[in-house]
Image (cartoon, rainbow, N blue to C red; front, side):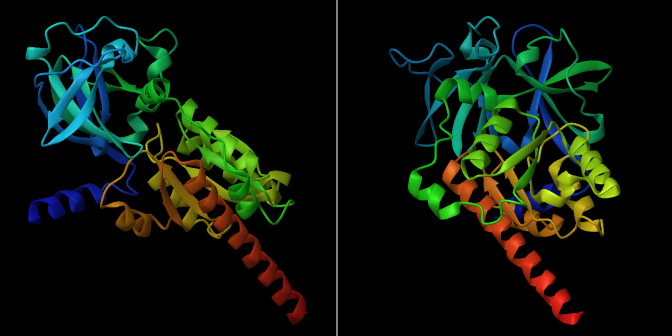
Length: 322
């Protein structure tokens, strides 16, 4: 337990500093790819796999890991590459995404690198597996692709953004004039999920692809006192994003006199025992694990309506004072 607490403490030090750790690996060939270490539970030599009849073509079997049966996905096949044929020499990267545990089959594991999110860039046109890359970075003068695992899992399992009529009725936004939500997320899948949830509740959305784009847009709205700023009620942000992560975005919002009163919900596929301390550290109002439309809808409605109640109280107080 002491080791676990120490590891959690070390990683929470990255919060608000715009830094992250990448696990680097290879699928087929020399091209290196990466995923955030936060998502990785462990890396092991690939155990014996049991095939599952009529399973999706990217699922190469299931494995028993510490008494738990998990699906094993050939990550190369998922992004359009040939399958790994010799699983005996391959590795299994066991991850937790969107409240689910699965293993990704990779041919080799390279290293862990610590990067600043400013070094994480949008993928260039024509890059390998571009449709499945959310970002790229340079390691040892080599271009490393950071995979959109959320897209891989969405294509495998599908996702349902439909909310029940009861949930919509219970969480409908109370102020139609201040119903704008700014979304910051580098995943196309995630942006779609969040947008559809908000729209079902009667809200409007403006989407941005990373924290820096969201930050620049917020500053522009404040400076120009734009109509978007007047209608803004909430910011929903991913954590892992190129150029500026969600922790840093939230920290900057809290340090800005004109923005600090806006609620911020961190919506991420990361999960674990460190979430509460991270939310407190960066000043976020909530942390919602991807993706459940009911949970997200409840959080969005709660904080937007709370913002409305607070604004109404402030306006009433000012009117009384005058």
